[in-house]
Structure formats: structure tokens, C-alpha cells
Image (cartoon, rainbow, N blue to C red; front, side, top):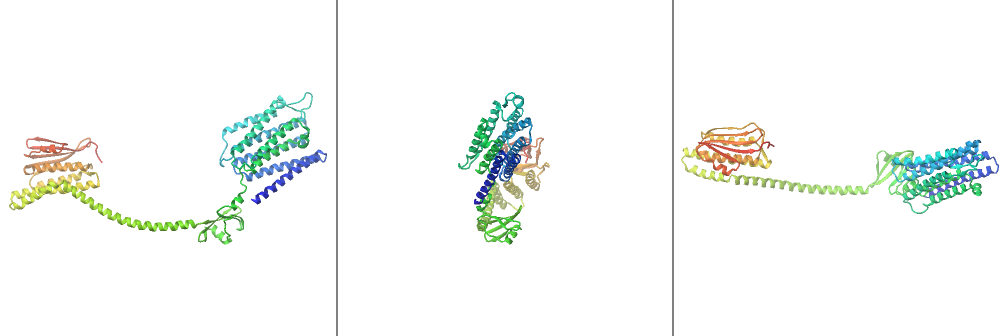
Length: 552
């Protein structure tokens, strides 16, 4: 911070010396000491001052658009002074001198306008561009410049006494001049108010630009009024106004109203991160207060991929323009977190092993419970057949060996056992899926029908070739229906024909055709979705399995 203050003082002394030399050159020129040479020296001093200020703007201002507009302001000041020098030093024709005087108003009007654009660009990101509507502000400014340049045609800005030479010494201001002057004041005040409104800096010295602007307006009014002492002390309006414009904008820069990228060395020094900036030979140029001294070898090693300086410090480096940057990362927190994560990992692995054991035990228990549930379900649904098998088995043991009655009992036991087995298969399949293939039902029916051939009962089973899927409950109902019909007619069954048909809509239906003297009409009472028809000793039982299009 002390270095910054010293640099600012040094710059202020140089600027003051340039201005004093320029004033001295004006005084010497006014008193007859080589006025032409003193005029050129004075011009060169002021132009050098404005160009130097413009160059410093390029280095100090952060926002690109603000930087461009302020640079344009410095160039307009140089243009203004060049026009003024040409008017007084190189042009002897009065008409030419008058038009050069008119050209004063080009920078006088555009410098305040550019200041408005500067104010509007403050606080915006680097890629910001002013809205397109702001270009309309160029229109009144350009019209006012044109109004002044064409004054000889209408004399709305300046008028001149009749029968006298038209110069800037004997002019009379007209209403157009106040319009021009008012536009300048409006733009300047708007720019300053916008800058002050956007600023978040402290109240100290933030109104310094307003004081300088007020001095500029007062100076212009006194100069216009023609007061003699003002023209003697500060008779060069170009030099005075350029200095005041520059003073207003520079005071905005110095007070922080316009952000600059100065003071980063002090900010860098007080950074909490240990950082160093070196030249190409690794000699330290800047270092933060948190940076530890490092040997050159460690910096080189850090730039080649990083290295550990001690147990808790990681060194990293990167080449930059004109040197290298080296920073030190405190990784103690990371090491602590890694240690905590390692402990947590071990704890989680132990927990996971316990959970895996518990999961295996639970899975085994659930599997056994599910098996028991299915076995209970199968037993519950086939309990009647099991009891009947027990009864038939007792009767089978009591009958004469090889008798016809024993064969009938054996056939009935075989039919019931086949039903129990196939019913169990379909129940277990229902645990894995809600649907089963039609061929699973076909296999059950075919096995049951094969038992009938052992008893000499003729018949046929026809199944279509289809990949259709049946709801498990529909397949169970169909097989239960067949089993009930078979049990009712087994002793007096002569012929059977069983088929599953598929109509045009894709609906599946079971058709049972039994030739027997038994009464199968009770099936329609037990199964509401079944139709039972009789033609002499032929019974036709039909059950719908799926609706049209009901496919998985």
C-alpha cells in the first residue's frame, strides 16, 4: 500500500510539473519570448500529458468497453488541442481559423457523451455491450455538431456584428449555443450521477468529481461572459476544459468510482494462500505473507508435476509471461479427510459383511417361507384329492389283487395323483410370473389323457401351435374344470375329445367333448364362465380362457 501511495505521489508531481511548464510557456509566449516556439512546446506538453493518460487507462481499467471509451476521450482531447494549435499557429486565414474554432465543439460534445457510455458500462461483465438503443444518443450529438459547423449559414449558435470580420473575438451567443451547452451539461451530469449511483465505495472523496465538474461549468460561464481577468489568467479554454475533463475522470479512477486493476500487489501480499511470483530465474518478485521460503530446486520440481514440501504442504508451479508462479497448498485438511474416509471405509466394510450375512440368512429364510407357502397353497387346493387318494388307497388294499375293481381304483388314484402333480407345477409357476405358456396347460391335459388310455378309454387331444400366454388363474381353472369333468365321468367314460381353439380375434377357449352316461351339468354351477350342453350321451363343455387380443 505504501508503494502505491508513493507511485501516486510521483505521478502527481510529474503531472503538476508538466502543467506548470505549459503555463510557463504560455506566460513567456504572451510576453513576447518566442511566442511561436512556446506555443508549440506548450502544445507538445499537453498532448504528451493526454496521451500518457490514455496509455495509463489501457493499463489500469479492467472492463474492455470502459477502457475503449476512456481511450477515445483521451484521443478527443488530443484532437481538440491539435485543432486549437492549428488555429493559432498555422492558419492565418480568418475563415479557416473560424471553422477550426467551430471544430472545438466536436470534442466538446462527444467527450460528455462518451462519459455517459462509460457510466452505463460500469459494473458489467467483460463481454458486455451497450444496448442498441444507446446508439440513438449519437444522433442529437451529431446534429448539434453539424449545427455549429454550419453556423455561417444560419447564425443560430453565434452571430456577428454587421460590417465586421467574423471571428471568435466578436461573436454574440445565440439560443442554439445554449442548446449545445445544455446538452454538454446534461450528458456530463448524467454520467457523473450514474457513476455515483453505481458506486459502493465509502463516502470519502467520492464527490470530488462533482466538485471538478462544477468548477468546469463555472469556468465556462465566466469565460462566455467575457470577463477580462478570466481571459488573462486562464484564457485558453481548450487547455482548461481538457484538464478539467481529465481531472473529473481521473478522480473517478482514484476514488474507485471507476474500477481499476491497480493495488493487486498489496492484495496479493495479504492473500491467505501461500503464493510467489518469480522471474525466469526463479528470483522472487512478489510473495504473499503466507508463503514459506522455498529453494530454487523445489520450485523447479514443483513445475514438473508438483511435489510434497513437507507432510502437509503440496507445492505446485506454472510458467507465466516473464516468469513463474508458485503456490503452496495446505493439504492437512485433505489428509485428515482421507484418514477419516479410510476409517469409514473399514467400518462400512465390516457393516457390509454383517449385512451380507444377514441378507443371506434372510434370503434363505424367505425362500423356505415361500416354499412352505406354496406347498401349503398346493396342499390346500388339492386337499380333497389327497383325502380321496387316502380313501382309495385303503380300499385298494382291501380288494382282491388283480381284480377289475382294483384296476378301477388304481386308475382313479393315478388320475388324482397326476392332477395333484400338474396343479402343483402351475402354482409354482405362478410365483415366478403372472402368465404361463399355453403348452404348459397342454402338457398337464396330455398327461391326464394318457392315463385314460391305460384304462382303454379312447380319445384325442388337439392343441393349436401358438405362443400365446395364459393368465395362471385361467390355466388353473381350465385344468380344474377338466379334472372335475373327468372325476364325474371316469367310471362310465367311453370317449373323449379335448381341444383349445383360437378364433379370429385371438381369443382362446377350452372345449371338452365326453361320451358318457354321467351327468356333467353340475359343472355349470361350479364354474359360472362354463357352458354345458348335452346331446344324448355326448356332453359338450366350453370355457373361455382369454378375450380377443389378450396376449402377453
